[in-house]
Length: 384
Image (cartoon, rainbow, N blue to C red; front, side):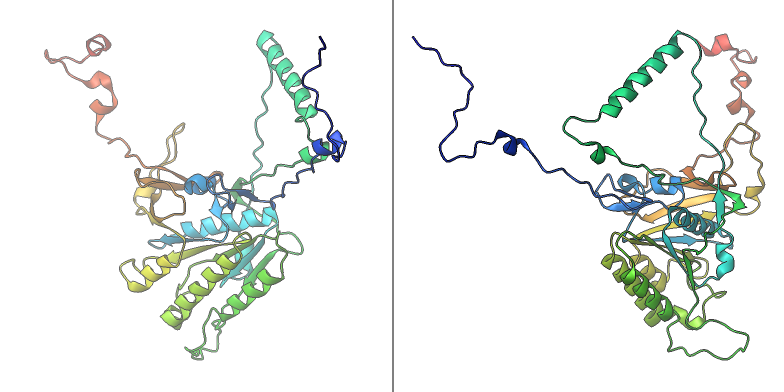
């Protein structure tokens, strides 16, 4: 009785006897993301940071501003919290090496960008005890296995560099722009001068900026990220009166939206809009909102309520409310959101909660509660 070893594949006639060729596979190359961008966990589309981490979190699953989209920041009153958000957005672009395009503002606006914060991450110092030694040994073992890499991958495929997505800035410092600078300042087509001559209403004040954007976007390599910044849209301090004509402003927003859609992986835009001059009840404002991908509103508190000093050890009091009108992949409108602008933390967006009433001693101190006998409730009476 003859026995034959099982599991042996007999070679067939006419087949190539090269087992190594069937097992070899081409090395997979992953496309490297441009600096300052990362794919969205929700859709995989590239996103970039606004320079404000709490604002990036508002975009829900995207965790950042989606490239190829625009964000409209409406603001009530005479404050300029929206301008601070634009400066953080521009400063983040300068640090990441992106190309920044500012419309309607001069070079003095670029010299007011906040500088990088010098806060260094706290290093964890291991204690000289049994727990510290065990943790150190685990770190060494994990580091050794990490150096081995995954099975079947080469060393060149594993060399990936991680960059910071959102930096921390300090408002008390100023960012030193590189030379040559990657910020472009474009004036209006009908820039106001001291001659006091009447401007031609038929000339669009946005024509030069559109031409500049088309030239820059078409001539840049696909790895260059562009940040478009438009501060105080239609503000009388910057724009002539005919800039608010629908044939000018709506045509400009349509063209800007078309450019963002034509370059969905390299361009994004942030716009601030004075809501006190153009209320949301007007048709022009509604059209501006419809032509924007995301819309939020900043409603600062009156100046009298901003004089409340922060208690040491507690969070700073809110400086205004934030309303979400439309947000790409944004969070739901379940909680009332507030914001506070700090020197080191920047603009922080958080859920709003009412502070305790000053005269409500009973609500703040459990020892102020009364019992049936008219006395004060003690800890024993409360823990029944």
